Length: 85
Image 1 (cartoon, one colour):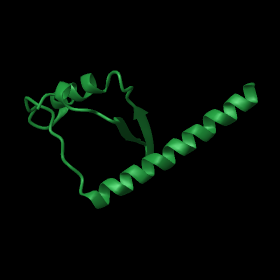
Image 2: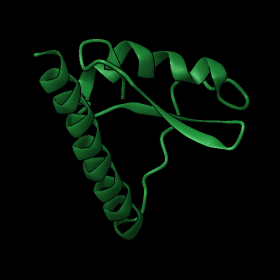
Image 3: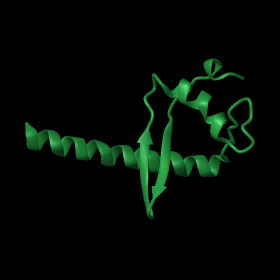
Image 4: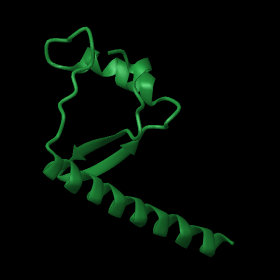
């Protein structure tokens, strides 16, 4: 399967730096290109990007955390807009 044949619904990179976790969202327009490059950085540099499916119980937690983070980001944006507007 190539990345052009799949529907990437969301893509974000979680980065842990000095004990703090950050989110680096990837734009939907560039998600396929980004995912296609991941294999170059995976162990053994496979020809195709290796994806590991999460069990539903884990995926549910990750998606819930993502939704909460989205609400947090929206609140920050709204606060900045009301301060500037």
